[in-house]
Image 1 (cartoon, rainbow, N blue to C red):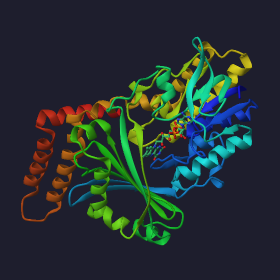
Image 2: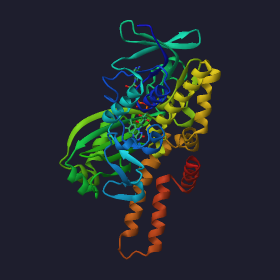
Image 3: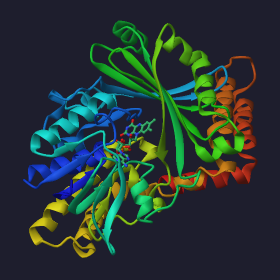
Image 4: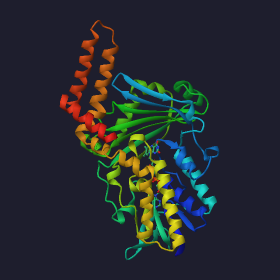
Amino acid sequence: ADERFDVIVVGAGPAGTAAAYTIAKAGLKVALIERGEFPGAKNIFGGVLYRKQLEDLIPEFWKEAPLERTIIEQRLWVLGEDNTFQVAFRDGRFQDPPNCWTGLRVKFDQWFASKAEQAGAVPIYETVVTELLRDVHRVVGVRTDRVDGDLYANIVIIADGVNSLLGKSLMVHREWNPDQVSLAVKEVISLPKQTIQDRFNLEDNEGCTIELIGQMSKMAGLGFLYTNKDTLSLGVGVMVSDLQKKRVKPYEVLDSIKRHPMISRLIQGGEVKEYSGHLIPEGGFDSIPPLAGDGWMICGDAAQMVNAVHREGTNLAVTSGRLAGETAIAAHLRGDFSFGTLDDYNTAIRASFVHKDLKKYRGVHSLLGFGDSEKLFDKLPESLNEAIYQMLLVDGVPKKDKQKMAMRLLRDAAGGNLDLLRLGIKGWRAMN
Ligand code: FAD
């Protein structure tokens, strides 16, 4: 009770653990508090883990971390009702050094936190932080659900994920709006290792990812199917605003994907081992809250740091956690834990790819508005597939007429020539 630390980190996801690891390595006294029975116990993601940002912390970590398969091929499938337009990219260079892997959080988070523990972080698991302790404006510690569970520190790093009750309590953000988060549901489906390799055209340890767009009950959503060692991760994330408007349940969307002829043959015979749901921050650049104040910093999902276009989140979390950790170390050396010093974290984030990438895609959020998203995620993919079908069908119709028909299909899906042009310009701007 009433124990004192240099830094308290709340949440042992990728952001919190990266912060605690960085701080512990510098010899400071840091607590890593996690509500789960162990780190990762209840955490889920798609998911893909990236090398670069983790390697910045732990060189060649992949030689010991529990990873599933090295991703050598990434596919994008546009699902129509009965058809699929596919794009795929495979490159041997993605293997050496690996660019990214599939992973399961229940194993990975536990391993990553064990590295922070080995570096000296004090693990406080099965413990919920219920509120921040404040001395007027300054955050001075946390209250936990343990008896006599108040803990004090010079700095509290908030890395409690997308719901971030602590962020809300600081009023750095409110309850997210339905158009700032998507709800993802995911199944882990077990299949023999060899069956996975045969079905996905892979060798031992090689993996592939398939991103899915299109036939998903007309929702602004993205599906995914990733290969693990002897399981597949199949899921879909749908904007909460769309689920509310269309009164559809997320598992209904997942079921419709599972029934799609291209997907059902890949998961056939598999047994669902796990079913879970989780929110994903989708607000992007304009939803990033203030990142620091007197005695506190906030990172990862709690600060909306997810690049949904590239399905990157863990790597932004790791980098923000590391930068918050480095700022805490500098503040310790200066003996100043006020906003004036901790705002250096904000400066470091602004200089990093986290800020730059989120800024680049800041317009994407506006594309997720209901009218446009229905066109982009449902009508246009459907028409694209129909246009390709017509172009490939050899039925004696002259190609010029087919081309006109294809253009008409796309135009009608967008709502007319002007709307097609408007969507094109909006899409181009959003991606630039
Ligand atoms: P989290 O991972 O959410 O960790 C927060 C931790 O804080 C949790 O362990 C939680 O138990 C703990 N906690 C919360 N509140 C408290 C409290 N009050 N007291 C104590 N502990 C608390 N990213 C990728 O890079 N690649 C992908 O393929 C990918 N796919 C995704 C697919 C899905 C379906 C989802 C949901 C997300 C995906 N992401 C992906 C995003 C990625 O998972 C997140 O960006 C990342 O996990 C954020 O890390 P974090 O540490 O900020 O938060």
